[in-house]
Image (tube, rainbow over all chains, first blue to last red; front, side, top):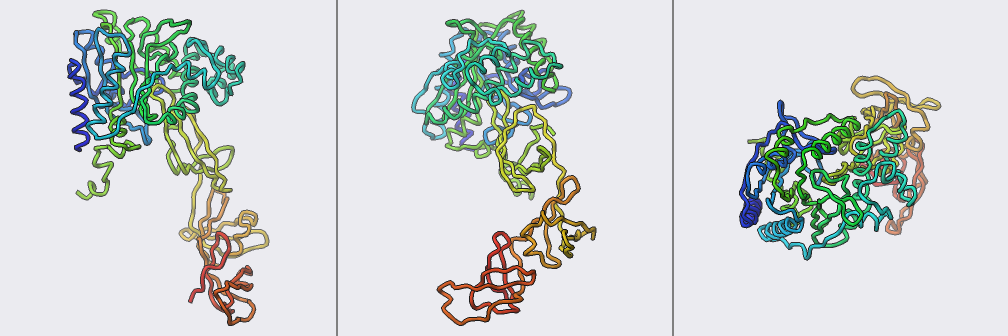
Length: 339
Length: 185
Protein backbone atom coordinates (compact mmCIF):
# COMPACT_ATOMS: atom_id res chain seq x y z
CA UNK A 1 0.00 0.00 0.00
CA UNK A 2 2.83 2.40 0.88
CA UNK A 3 4.48 1.52 -2.42
CA UNK A 4 1.45 2.61 -4.45
CA UNK A 5 0.94 5.71 -2.32
CA UNK A 6 4.51 6.84 -2.91
CA UNK A 7 4.48 5.99 -6.62
CA UNK A 8 1.12 7.61 -7.38
CA UNK A 9 2.31 10.76 -5.58
CA UNK A 10 5.54 10.70 -7.62
CA UNK A 11 3.60 10.50 -10.91
CA UNK A 12 1.43 13.45 -9.95
CA UNK A 13 4.42 15.48 -8.75
CA UNK A 14 6.29 14.89 -12.02
CA UNK A 15 3.44 15.72 -14.38
CA UNK A 16 2.02 18.63 -12.36
CA UNK A 17 5.58 19.94 -12.18
CA UNK A 18 5.47 20.11 -15.99
CA UNK A 19 2.40 22.35 -15.81
CA UNK A 20 -0.12 19.69 -16.76
CA UNK A 21 -3.67 19.57 -15.40
CA UNK A 22 -4.98 16.27 -14.05
CA UNK A 23 -8.23 15.05 -15.59
CA UNK A 24 -10.48 12.08 -15.01
CA UNK A 25 -12.59 10.82 -17.93
CA UNK A 26 -15.34 8.17 -17.64
CA UNK A 27 -14.37 4.53 -17.32
CA UNK A 28 -17.43 3.45 -19.32
CA UNK A 29 -17.33 4.62 -22.94
CA UNK A 30 -19.58 4.33 -26.00
CA UNK A 31 -16.69 3.50 -28.32
CA UNK A 32 -13.40 2.02 -27.18
CA UNK A 33 -10.15 2.57 -29.08
CA UNK A 34 -10.26 0.61 -32.34
CA UNK A 35 -7.24 -1.71 -32.35
CA UNK A 36 -6.82 -5.04 -34.16
CA UNK A 37 -5.64 -6.97 -31.11
CA UNK A 38 -7.10 -5.11 -28.14
CA UNK A 39 -10.50 -6.41 -27.10
CA UNK A 40 -12.74 -4.38 -24.83
CA UNK A 41 -14.81 -5.79 -21.99
CA UNK A 42 -18.48 -5.00 -22.58
CA UNK A 43 -20.44 -3.17 -19.89
CA UNK A 44 -23.80 -2.93 -21.71
CA UNK A 45 -24.84 -0.66 -23.24
CA UNK A 46 -21.26 0.65 -23.11
CA UNK A 47 -17.72 -0.70 -22.91
CA UNK A 48 -15.04 -0.40 -20.26
CA UNK A 49 -12.32 1.86 -21.67
CA UNK A 50 -9.26 0.09 -23.10
CA UNK A 51 -7.48 3.47 -23.02
CA UNK A 52 -8.54 7.04 -22.17
CA UNK A 53 -7.06 8.33 -25.44
CA UNK A 54 -10.18 9.37 -27.37
CA UNK A 55 -11.85 10.95 -24.33
CA UNK A 56 -8.70 12.93 -23.49
CA UNK A 57 -8.29 14.07 -27.09
CA UNK A 58 -11.86 15.37 -27.05
CA UNK A 59 -10.90 17.44 -24.00
CA UNK A 60 -7.81 18.69 -25.83
CA UNK A 61 -10.05 19.82 -28.71
CA UNK A 62 -11.80 22.10 -26.22
CA UNK A 63 -8.94 23.44 -24.16
CA UNK A 64 -5.45 24.77 -24.40
CA UNK A 65 -3.65 23.10 -21.51
CA UNK A 66 -1.52 20.02 -21.42
CA UNK A 67 -3.32 17.29 -19.47
CA UNK A 68 -2.63 13.99 -17.76
CA UNK A 69 -4.67 11.19 -16.27
CA UNK A 70 -4.09 8.09 -14.18
CA UNK A 71 -6.86 5.81 -15.41
CA UNK A 72 -8.14 2.30 -14.93
CA UNK A 73 -8.27 0.47 -18.25
CA UNK A 74 -9.55 -2.96 -19.21
CA UNK A 75 -8.45 -5.36 -21.94
CA UNK A 76 -10.19 -8.70 -22.33
CA UNK A 77 -8.21 -11.96 -22.13
CA UNK A 78 -4.82 -10.37 -21.50
CA UNK A 79 -3.67 -12.52 -18.62
CA UNK A 80 -0.05 -13.32 -17.83
CA UNK A 81 2.88 -12.47 -15.59
CA UNK A 82 3.10 -9.00 -17.13
CA UNK A 83 -0.47 -8.70 -18.40
CA UNK A 84 -3.70 -8.15 -16.56
CA UNK A 85 -7.24 -7.59 -17.77
CA UNK A 86 -7.37 -4.47 -15.56
CA UNK A 87 -4.46 -2.07 -15.15
CA UNK A 88 -3.52 1.59 -14.81
CA UNK A 89 -2.39 3.80 -17.65
CA UNK A 90 -0.68 7.09 -17.01
CA UNK A 91 -1.57 9.06 -20.11
CA UNK A 92 -0.49 12.61 -20.89
CA UNK A 93 -0.63 15.09 -23.76
CA UNK A 94 1.62 18.09 -24.29
CA UNK A 95 -0.16 20.80 -26.23
CA UNK A 96 2.01 22.85 -28.55
CA UNK A 97 4.75 20.23 -28.81
CA UNK A 98 5.06 17.70 -31.59
CA UNK A 99 8.63 16.69 -30.88
CA UNK A 100 8.83 13.16 -29.55
CA UNK A 101 12.07 13.83 -27.67
CA UNK A 102 10.17 16.23 -25.38
CA UNK A 103 7.71 13.52 -24.29
CA UNK A 104 10.50 10.93 -24.20
CA UNK A 105 12.14 13.19 -21.61
CA UNK A 106 8.82 13.09 -19.70
CA UNK A 107 8.99 9.29 -19.74
CA UNK A 108 12.55 9.35 -18.41
CA UNK A 109 11.62 11.77 -15.60
CA UNK A 110 8.55 9.74 -14.69
CA UNK A 111 10.55 6.51 -14.60
CA UNK A 112 13.23 8.16 -12.44
CA UNK A 113 10.58 9.61 -10.11
CA UNK A 114 8.76 6.32 -9.59
CA UNK A 115 12.02 4.38 -9.12
CA UNK A 116 13.06 6.94 -6.48
CA UNK A 117 9.66 6.66 -4.76
CA UNK A 118 9.95 2.86 -4.65
CA UNK A 119 13.61 2.90 -3.63
CA UNK A 120 14.62 0.96 -6.76
CA UNK A 121 17.75 1.28 -8.90
CA UNK A 122 16.74 3.18 -12.05
CA UNK A 123 17.97 2.48 -15.60
CA UNK A 124 21.68 3.29 -15.93
CA UNK A 125 21.08 5.05 -19.25
CA UNK A 126 18.58 5.61 -22.05
CA UNK A 127 19.26 4.45 -25.59
CA UNK A 128 17.59 5.54 -28.84
CA UNK A 129 17.07 2.99 -31.62
CA UNK A 130 15.09 2.88 -34.86
CA UNK A 131 12.64 0.05 -35.40
CA UNK A 132 13.20 -0.44 -39.14
CA UNK A 133 16.98 -0.38 -38.61
CA UNK A 134 16.71 -3.10 -35.96
CA UNK A 135 14.48 -5.13 -38.25
CA UNK A 136 17.08 -4.86 -41.03
CA UNK A 137 19.97 -5.75 -38.70
CA UNK A 138 18.29 -8.82 -37.23
CA UNK A 139 16.44 -10.24 -40.24
CA UNK A 140 18.04 -8.66 -43.32
CA UNK A 141 14.67 -7.13 -44.25
CA UNK A 142 15.36 -3.58 -45.41
CA UNK A 143 11.96 -1.94 -45.72
CA UNK A 144 10.43 1.48 -46.42
CA UNK A 145 7.52 1.07 -44.00
CA UNK A 146 4.62 1.15 -46.45
CA UNK A 147 5.08 -2.09 -48.43
CA UNK A 148 1.94 -4.03 -49.28
CA UNK A 149 1.41 -7.57 -48.01
CA UNK A 150 2.46 -9.29 -51.27
CA UNK A 151 5.61 -7.15 -51.39
CA UNK A 152 6.43 -8.09 -47.79
CA UNK A 153 6.01 -11.80 -48.58
CA UNK A 154 8.16 -11.45 -51.69
CA UNK A 155 10.87 -9.54 -49.82
CA UNK A 156 10.96 -12.26 -47.15
CA UNK A 157 11.44 -14.85 -49.88
CA UNK A 158 14.23 -12.86 -51.55
CA UNK A 159 16.04 -12.34 -48.24
CA UNK A 160 15.68 -15.95 -47.12
CA UNK A 161 13.43 -14.99 -44.19
CA UNK A 162 11.22 -17.94 -43.19
CA UNK A 163 7.64 -16.91 -44.00
CA UNK A 164 6.24 -19.64 -41.77
CA UNK A 165 8.07 -18.15 -38.80
CA UNK A 166 7.48 -14.48 -39.50
CA UNK A 167 4.30 -14.34 -41.59
CA UNK A 168 2.36 -17.62 -41.15
CA UNK A 169 -1.10 -16.02 -41.12
CA UNK A 170 -0.36 -13.75 -44.08
CA UNK A 171 0.96 -16.70 -46.07
CA UNK A 172 -2.23 -18.63 -45.30
CA UNK A 173 -4.38 -15.62 -46.16
CA UNK A 174 -2.88 -15.41 -49.65
CA UNK A 175 -2.92 -19.18 -50.15
CA UNK A 176 -6.70 -19.10 -49.73
CA UNK A 177 -7.78 -17.69 -53.11
CA UNK A 178 -11.48 -17.85 -52.19
CA UNK A 179 -10.81 -15.15 -49.62
CA UNK A 180 -11.00 -11.63 -51.03
CA UNK A 181 -9.21 -9.25 -48.68
CA UNK A 182 -8.86 -5.53 -49.26
CA UNK A 183 -5.29 -4.43 -49.87
CA UNK A 184 -5.23 -2.10 -46.86
CA UNK A 185 -6.52 -4.82 -44.52
CA UNK A 186 -4.01 -7.37 -45.82
CA UNK A 187 -1.19 -4.85 -45.48
CA UNK A 188 -2.11 -3.97 -41.88
CA UNK A 189 -2.36 -7.67 -41.06
CA UNK A 190 0.99 -8.53 -42.64
CA UNK A 191 2.85 -5.70 -40.89
CA UNK A 192 1.22 -6.44 -37.53
CA UNK A 193 2.18 -10.08 -37.90
CA UNK A 194 5.73 -9.24 -38.94
CA UNK A 195 6.01 -6.82 -35.99
CA UNK A 196 4.71 -9.42 -33.52
CA UNK A 197 6.98 -12.17 -34.84
CA UNK A 198 10.00 -9.88 -34.87
CA UNK A 199 9.30 -8.73 -31.28
CA UNK A 200 9.06 -12.30 -30.10
CA UNK A 201 11.93 -13.83 -32.05
CA UNK A 202 14.46 -11.00 -32.20
CA UNK A 203 13.61 -7.73 -30.49
CA UNK A 204 12.58 -8.93 -27.02
CA UNK A 205 15.60 -11.25 -26.63
CA UNK A 206 17.86 -8.42 -27.83
CA UNK A 207 16.32 -5.93 -25.39
CA UNK A 208 16.62 -8.44 -22.55
CA UNK A 209 20.36 -8.71 -23.22
CA UNK A 210 20.98 -4.96 -23.02
CA UNK A 211 21.03 -5.01 -19.24
CA UNK A 212 19.47 -2.46 -16.85
CA UNK A 213 18.81 0.27 -19.40
CA UNK A 214 15.90 2.17 -20.88
CA UNK A 215 15.35 2.08 -24.64
CA UNK A 216 13.23 4.39 -26.81
CA UNK A 217 12.34 2.65 -30.05
CA UNK A 218 11.11 5.02 -32.76
CA UNK A 219 10.96 4.97 -36.54
CA UNK A 220 8.02 2.58 -36.78
CA UNK A 221 6.60 1.80 -40.21
CA UNK A 222 3.73 4.03 -41.32
CA UNK A 223 1.41 1.02 -41.58
CA UNK A 224 1.74 0.56 -37.78
CA UNK A 225 1.06 4.24 -37.04
CA UNK A 226 -2.10 3.55 -34.99
CA UNK A 227 -3.13 7.08 -33.93
CA UNK A 228 0.11 8.86 -34.78
CA UNK A 229 1.04 11.12 -37.66
CA UNK A 230 3.11 9.77 -40.55
CA UNK A 231 5.56 11.34 -42.93
CA UNK A 232 8.34 10.49 -45.31
CA UNK A 233 11.76 10.59 -43.69
CA UNK A 234 14.91 9.76 -45.64
CA UNK A 235 13.07 7.70 -48.25
CA UNK A 236 11.11 5.77 -45.63
CA UNK A 237 7.45 6.09 -44.77
CA UNK A 238 7.46 6.38 -41.00
CA UNK A 239 5.07 6.84 -38.10
CA UNK A 240 5.99 9.51 -35.53
CA UNK A 241 5.62 7.00 -32.78
CA UNK A 242 7.87 5.44 -30.16
CA UNK A 243 7.85 2.72 -27.57
CA UNK A 244 9.83 2.94 -24.33
CA UNK A 245 11.19 -0.24 -22.81
CA UNK A 246 12.83 -0.50 -19.39
CA UNK A 247 14.85 -3.59 -18.41
CA UNK A 248 13.38 -5.32 -21.48
CA UNK A 249 9.76 -4.62 -20.47
CA UNK A 250 7.52 -2.55 -22.76
CA UNK A 251 6.38 0.39 -20.68
CA UNK A 252 5.15 3.28 -22.81
CA UNK A 253 3.89 4.19 -26.24
CA UNK A 254 4.01 7.76 -27.55
CA UNK A 255 2.76 9.62 -30.62
CA UNK A 256 2.91 12.84 -32.45
CA UNK A 257 -0.87 12.84 -32.53
CA UNK A 258 -2.75 12.42 -35.78
CA UNK A 259 -5.09 15.39 -36.36
CA UNK A 260 -6.59 14.63 -39.77
CA UNK A 261 -10.19 13.36 -39.35
CA UNK A 262 -10.30 11.70 -42.78
CA UNK A 263 -7.10 9.75 -42.27
CA UNK A 264 -8.20 8.81 -38.75
CA UNK A 265 -11.63 7.56 -39.88
CA UNK A 266 -10.00 5.51 -42.65
CA UNK A 267 -7.55 3.90 -40.20
CA UNK A 268 -10.42 2.89 -37.88
CA UNK A 269 -12.27 1.39 -40.87
CA UNK A 270 -9.21 -0.64 -41.93
CA UNK A 271 -8.75 -1.97 -38.38
CA UNK A 272 -12.40 -2.99 -38.27
CA UNK A 273 -11.95 -4.66 -41.66
CA UNK A 274 -9.07 -6.66 -40.21
CA UNK A 275 -11.07 -7.53 -37.10
CA UNK A 276 -13.87 -8.93 -39.29
CA UNK A 277 -11.30 -10.82 -41.39
CA UNK A 278 -9.98 -12.40 -38.17
CA UNK A 279 -13.48 -13.36 -37.07
CA UNK A 280 -13.66 -10.75 -34.33
CA UNK A 281 -16.51 -8.32 -33.82
CA UNK A 282 -15.93 -4.92 -35.38
CA UNK A 283 -15.99 -2.09 -32.87
CA UNK A 284 -18.16 1.02 -32.90
CA UNK A 285 -16.47 4.10 -34.32
CA UNK A 286 -16.36 7.11 -32.00
CA UNK A 287 -18.10 9.53 -34.37
CA UNK A 288 -18.12 12.48 -31.94
CA UNK A 289 -14.32 12.07 -31.73
CA UNK A 290 -13.94 12.18 -35.54
CA UNK A 291 -16.29 15.16 -35.60
CA UNK A 292 -14.20 16.96 -32.95
CA UNK A 293 -11.07 16.38 -35.07
CA UNK A 294 -12.88 18.26 -37.87
CA UNK A 295 -14.11 21.05 -35.61
CA UNK A 296 -12.90 22.49 -33.28
CA UNK A 297 -9.92 20.30 -34.23
CA UNK A 298 -7.13 18.78 -32.19
CA UNK A 299 -4.30 21.17 -31.32
CA UNK A 300 -0.83 20.07 -32.36
CA UNK A 301 0.32 17.80 -29.55
CA UNK A 302 2.33 14.78 -28.53
CA UNK A 303 1.09 12.18 -26.06
CA UNK A 304 2.21 9.11 -24.19
CA UNK A 305 0.50 6.17 -22.48
CA UNK A 306 2.55 4.40 -19.83
CA UNK A 307 1.69 1.19 -17.98
CA UNK A 308 1.88 2.22 -14.34
CA UNK A 309 1.59 -1.26 -12.85
CA UNK A 310 4.58 -2.46 -14.88
CA UNK A 311 6.61 0.61 -13.91
CA UNK A 312 5.88 0.05 -10.20
CA UNK A 313 6.68 -3.65 -10.64
CA UNK A 314 10.09 -2.79 -12.12
CA UNK A 315 10.78 -0.06 -9.58
CA UNK A 316 10.01 -2.51 -6.77
CA UNK A 317 12.42 -5.02 -8.32
CA UNK A 318 9.72 -7.58 -9.14
CA UNK A 319 8.99 -9.55 -12.30
CA UNK A 320 5.30 -10.21 -11.96
CA UNK A 321 2.31 -7.84 -11.74
CA UNK A 322 0.68 -10.02 -9.09
CA UNK A 323 3.61 -9.16 -6.77
CA UNK A 324 2.57 -5.51 -6.55
CA UNK A 325 -1.19 -5.83 -7.07
CA UNK A 326 -3.40 -4.15 -4.46
CA UNK A 327 -6.26 -6.57 -5.16
CA UNK A 328 -6.61 -8.10 -1.70
CA UNK A 329 -9.02 -10.73 -3.00
CA UNK A 330 -6.50 -11.91 -5.60
CA UNK A 331 -3.56 -11.89 -3.21
CA UNK A 332 -5.22 -13.46 -0.15
CA UNK A 333 -8.24 -15.43 -1.40
CA UNK A 334 -8.58 -17.66 1.68
CA UNK A 335 -8.49 -14.81 4.16
CA UNK A 336 -11.05 -12.75 2.27
CA UNK A 337 -13.43 -15.68 1.91
CA UNK A 338 -13.47 -16.28 5.66
CA UNK A 339 -14.50 -12.75 6.49
CA UNK B 1 -12.14 -23.24 -28.48
CA UNK B 2 -10.45 -19.89 -29.02
CA UNK B 3 -6.74 -19.62 -28.32
CA UNK B 4 -7.55 -16.99 -25.66
CA UNK B 5 -9.20 -19.77 -23.61
CA UNK B 6 -5.83 -21.53 -23.23
CA UNK B 7 -4.78 -22.15 -19.64
CA UNK B 8 -2.45 -24.44 -17.81
CA UNK B 9 -3.91 -27.98 -17.74
CA UNK B 10 -6.14 -27.32 -20.78
CA UNK B 11 -6.52 -30.48 -22.88
CA UNK B 12 -6.19 -30.15 -26.64
CA UNK B 13 -6.63 -32.40 -29.64
CA UNK B 14 -3.82 -32.00 -32.17
CA UNK B 15 -3.39 -34.33 -35.16
CA UNK B 16 -5.71 -36.83 -33.51
CA UNK B 17 -3.72 -36.99 -30.27
CA UNK B 18 -4.67 -35.66 -26.83
CA UNK B 19 -2.23 -33.13 -25.32
CA UNK B 20 -2.26 -31.34 -21.97
CA UNK B 21 -0.84 -27.84 -21.45
CA UNK B 22 1.83 -28.20 -18.75
CA UNK B 23 3.23 -24.67 -18.94
CA UNK B 24 1.65 -21.53 -20.31
CA UNK B 25 2.92 -18.05 -20.96
CA UNK B 26 1.08 -15.11 -22.54
CA UNK B 27 3.12 -12.36 -24.18
CA UNK B 28 1.89 -9.51 -26.30
CA UNK B 29 3.50 -6.40 -27.68
CA UNK B 30 1.10 -3.53 -26.91
CA UNK B 31 0.32 -3.00 -30.58
CA UNK B 32 0.74 -6.56 -31.75
CA UNK B 33 -0.70 -10.03 -31.65
CA UNK B 34 -0.83 -12.00 -28.43
CA UNK B 35 1.40 -15.06 -28.38
CA UNK B 36 0.40 -18.07 -26.33
CA UNK B 37 3.56 -20.05 -25.59
CA UNK B 38 2.80 -23.52 -24.33
CA UNK B 39 4.62 -26.64 -23.28
CA UNK B 40 2.49 -29.63 -24.17
CA UNK B 41 2.59 -33.21 -23.00
CA UNK B 42 1.09 -36.01 -25.04
CA UNK B 43 -1.39 -37.68 -22.69
CA UNK B 44 -0.76 -41.11 -24.22
CA UNK B 45 2.94 -41.25 -25.05
CA UNK B 46 4.18 -38.67 -22.52
CA UNK B 47 6.16 -36.90 -25.28
CA UNK B 48 6.61 -33.15 -24.72
CA UNK B 49 6.72 -30.34 -27.28
CA UNK B 50 6.74 -26.54 -27.31
CA UNK B 51 4.03 -24.79 -29.33
CA UNK B 52 3.21 -21.13 -29.83
CA UNK B 53 -0.19 -19.96 -31.01
CA UNK B 54 -1.21 -16.45 -32.02
CA UNK B 55 -4.28 -14.36 -31.25
CA UNK B 56 -7.29 -15.43 -33.25
CA UNK B 57 -6.26 -19.05 -33.85
CA UNK B 58 -8.80 -21.75 -33.15
CA UNK B 59 -8.06 -24.96 -31.23
CA UNK B 60 -9.95 -28.18 -30.58
CA UNK B 61 -10.45 -29.27 -27.00
CA UNK B 62 -9.66 -32.93 -26.42
CA UNK B 63 -12.37 -35.16 -25.01
CA UNK B 64 -10.30 -36.87 -22.34
CA UNK B 65 -11.31 -38.22 -18.99
CA UNK B 66 -9.46 -40.06 -16.28
CA UNK B 67 -11.43 -42.69 -14.33
CA UNK B 68 -10.53 -44.59 -11.14
CA UNK B 69 -10.67 -48.29 -11.96
CA UNK B 70 -9.70 -51.62 -10.43
CA UNK B 71 -7.76 -54.36 -12.22
CA UNK B 72 -9.86 -57.51 -12.50
CA UNK B 73 -8.10 -60.08 -14.69
CA UNK B 74 -6.03 -60.61 -17.80
CA UNK B 75 -7.27 -62.49 -20.87
CA UNK B 76 -4.86 -63.58 -23.56
CA UNK B 77 -4.25 -60.19 -25.15
CA UNK B 78 -6.16 -57.75 -22.98
CA UNK B 79 -6.54 -56.57 -19.43
CA UNK B 80 -9.92 -56.06 -17.86
CA UNK B 81 -10.62 -53.15 -15.48
CA UNK B 82 -13.76 -52.15 -13.57
CA UNK B 83 -14.93 -48.63 -12.78
CA UNK B 84 -14.92 -48.41 -8.97
CA UNK B 85 -17.99 -46.16 -9.00
CA UNK B 86 -20.21 -47.55 -11.77
CA UNK B 87 -18.91 -51.18 -11.92
CA UNK B 88 -18.65 -50.75 -15.70
CA UNK B 89 -15.94 -52.97 -17.17
CA UNK B 90 -13.52 -52.14 -19.98
CA UNK B 91 -10.79 -54.08 -21.72
CA UNK B 92 -7.45 -52.44 -22.37
CA UNK B 93 -5.25 -54.01 -25.03
CA UNK B 94 -1.94 -55.57 -24.05
CA UNK B 95 0.20 -53.15 -26.07
CA UNK B 96 -1.09 -50.17 -24.03
CA UNK B 97 -0.11 -51.88 -20.78
CA UNK B 98 3.35 -53.04 -21.82
CA UNK B 99 5.71 -53.75 -18.94
CA UNK B 100 3.21 -52.25 -16.47
CA UNK B 101 1.68 -55.76 -16.43
CA UNK B 102 4.53 -56.61 -14.02
CA UNK B 103 2.68 -54.67 -11.31
CA UNK B 104 -0.95 -55.48 -12.13
CA UNK B 105 -2.11 -57.27 -9.01
CA UNK B 106 -5.75 -58.28 -8.72
CA UNK B 107 -7.86 -55.35 -7.45
CA UNK B 108 -5.06 -52.83 -7.91
CA UNK B 109 -6.49 -49.29 -8.12
CA UNK B 110 -5.34 -47.47 -11.26
CA UNK B 111 -6.32 -44.43 -13.35
CA UNK B 112 -7.53 -45.30 -16.84
CA UNK B 113 -7.37 -42.49 -19.39
CA UNK B 114 -10.20 -42.32 -21.92
CA UNK B 115 -9.85 -40.34 -25.15
CA UNK B 116 -13.01 -39.95 -27.25
CA UNK B 117 -14.52 -42.57 -24.87
CA UNK B 118 -11.82 -45.17 -25.73
CA UNK B 119 -9.28 -46.31 -23.12
CA UNK B 120 -5.84 -45.12 -24.24
CA UNK B 121 -3.66 -45.55 -21.20
CA UNK B 122 -3.34 -46.77 -17.64
CA UNK B 123 -1.53 -44.90 -14.87
CA UNK B 124 -0.38 -47.05 -11.96
CA UNK B 125 0.18 -45.88 -8.40
CA UNK B 126 3.85 -44.94 -8.00
CA UNK B 127 4.40 -47.87 -5.62
CA UNK B 128 2.85 -51.32 -5.21
CA UNK B 129 3.27 -53.96 -2.50
CA UNK B 130 3.70 -57.57 -3.66
CA UNK B 131 4.54 -60.88 -2.03
CA UNK B 132 7.73 -62.80 -2.80
CA UNK B 133 6.83 -66.20 -4.30
CA UNK B 134 10.33 -67.42 -5.08
CA UNK B 135 13.85 -66.46 -4.19
CA UNK B 136 17.21 -68.00 -3.36
CA UNK B 137 17.61 -68.95 0.30
CA UNK B 138 18.43 -66.16 2.69
CA UNK B 139 22.10 -65.56 3.22
CA UNK B 140 23.42 -64.02 6.38
CA UNK B 141 26.05 -61.57 5.39
CA UNK B 142 27.30 -58.07 5.17
CA UNK B 143 24.34 -56.00 3.95
CA UNK B 144 26.53 -52.92 3.74
CA UNK B 145 28.16 -54.22 0.57
CA UNK B 146 24.78 -53.84 -1.13
CA UNK B 147 24.88 -57.41 -2.42
CA UNK B 148 21.59 -58.52 -4.03
CA UNK B 149 19.88 -61.62 -5.31
CA UNK B 150 16.94 -62.39 -7.59
CA UNK B 151 13.38 -62.66 -6.27
CA UNK B 152 10.08 -63.34 -8.05
CA UNK B 153 6.83 -61.75 -6.87
CA UNK B 154 3.18 -62.82 -7.23
CA UNK B 155 2.72 -61.38 -10.74
CA UNK B 156 5.74 -63.34 -11.98
CA UNK B 157 7.92 -60.25 -12.11
CA UNK B 158 11.58 -60.79 -11.15
CA UNK B 159 13.73 -58.14 -9.52
CA UNK B 160 16.93 -57.70 -7.52
CA UNK B 161 16.43 -57.59 -3.74
CA UNK B 162 18.75 -57.49 -0.70
CA UNK B 163 20.08 -60.81 0.60
CA UNK B 164 17.86 -60.87 3.72
CA UNK B 165 14.54 -61.13 1.80
CA UNK B 166 12.64 -64.43 2.23
CA UNK B 167 9.74 -66.12 0.41
CA UNK B 168 6.36 -64.93 1.74
CA UNK B 169 7.60 -61.46 2.67
CA UNK B 170 6.02 -58.38 1.15
CA UNK B 171 8.02 -55.84 -0.85
CA UNK B 172 7.32 -52.26 -1.76
CA UNK B 173 8.24 -51.78 -5.43
CA UNK B 174 8.60 -48.54 -7.39
CA UNK B 175 6.45 -48.90 -10.54
CA UNK B 176 8.35 -46.14 -12.39
CA UNK B 177 11.60 -48.11 -12.62
CA UNK B 178 10.65 -51.50 -11.21
CA UNK B 179 13.13 -51.37 -8.35
CA UNK B 180 12.92 -52.68 -4.78
CA UNK B 181 12.17 -49.95 -2.24
CA UNK B 182 11.77 -51.67 1.12
CA UNK B 183 10.44 -54.70 2.97
CA UNK B 184 6.89 -54.20 4.31
CA UNK B 185 5.93 -55.90 7.56
